[in-house]
Amino acid sequence: MSENVEVFLEQVPVFTLHELIERLRQASSPEGMDSHKNVKSVAYNLIKNRRRTGKIGVIKEGVYYVVRPGTIPDTAPVDQYLVTSKLSPDAVLAFHTALDVLGFGHSVFNTFYYFSKTYHRPVRFRGGQYRSVKAPPKLLKAGKELFGTTKIERLGVKIFTTDKERTLVEGLEHPEYCGGFEELYRSLEKIPYIQSEVVLDYLDIREQKNLYARVGFFLEQHREDLHVEEVFLHQLERNKPAQPVYWVPRRKGGVLVKRWNLIVPEAVKDRRWEEF
Image (cartoon, rainbow, N blue to C red):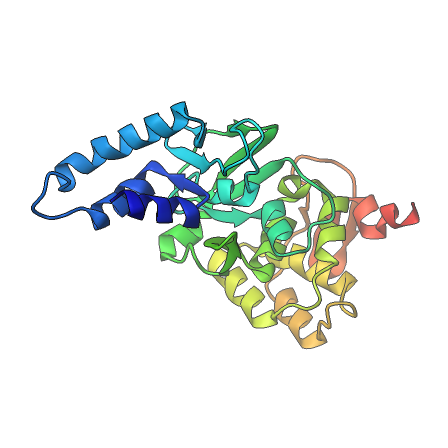
């Protein structure tokens, strides 16, 4: 069993107690004293001993990282995206965190976001804050919480993140989770192209007309760079709100863009940050 544990710790630099227990169960003998009823205590003792000897560090109770030889727990490298992925069994990296791992993030962020079916309290670790956002109710109701997601590899471990199309929609829905409009725009503008059918399918699941408007406005602004066809914009336009809506709720002012019935902050409409 000890050999199996070493292999596990080599393969999974950030892990949960549940993952360790499952690996120990797989390695245990059905007849011996290492059977399932003792596996939990073995896992607890293993973590306790390795924490005491500085071979394992703790992110929060139940989530740990491996301390490689030649390093110490306080300064051992820990991949922040792996940490994010381990904070819930159903974690899906989202918003600016998804933009980062997909290679589109503009600025370095110390807040990391993930979707989960349930809310989890924020976690602070080494100056970073890890925040859960409940997955959109329409996705949960339809059993499609993994729609528009993809798997990426970090240090040999595969984790879920929203793909570029879903991230675009959700970023435009919640710019505040992407560092605000300028950071969001500068990040989304790095995307080389989008698949219109994926965007439409996702919007159809969400059934929110204001999302069609936000996506339509943004894509019209970037139609050349993202190779957006007019027929796609027409499909979005057909689903726009019947009455004008604010992009930023509860904020007065802005400019009405009639095509989308969307009241847009002036700085966003004019992309004023490009002047600097």
